[in-house]
Length: 225
Image 1 (cartoon, one colour):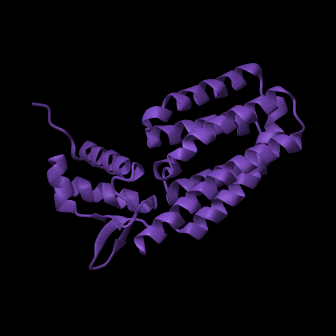
Image 2: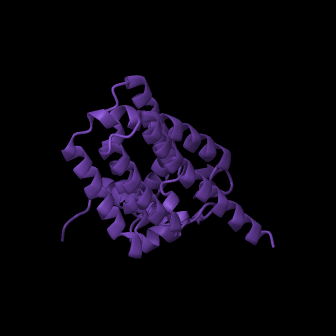
Image 3: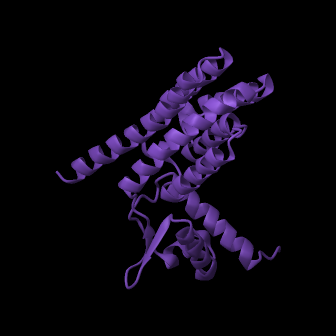
């Protein structure tokens, strides 16, 4: 029988918990009971505790004294401000990158978007989110302004700590997102004015923000009835 090292068990627990949080099987506020999770994963509480500490460091889990660990609540103001800022800087980075994007890069972006489209009928929100970041990375990474590019990277990093996947919460947004990707790519291929490309990329980000916040407010209103 193969002996599984403690460290690898911790990684297994982390991956499993992260997936549950991303899919909203464990939604905001869900209490993470170490013993119950350990029994489900058929391991001791030690690697589960290590996994939860790691998730806490990443912002996905909050630990309160005398209460325990629970999935972090979404700070709507932080989310809104991050998405607003990311829309501005990513839109600018995409517009500056556009003249530098060769046909193979655009083909790569199109390929990623087709992979996203293939997920729409049976949405894997976590995978969709990974592909979404890959798609946008192709379009903004060639940005010749390192300061703007640094701000884009910071925005994406801050966003992952707020919530791993917007699309898990607003699955209907995924289809519109793919369609808007097509529009951005077409503008770049057509050699559109930089401002038109910038606004398209910016509004794409802001529509995702608006859809998420609208869904949150609707959900909160239903809970209050």
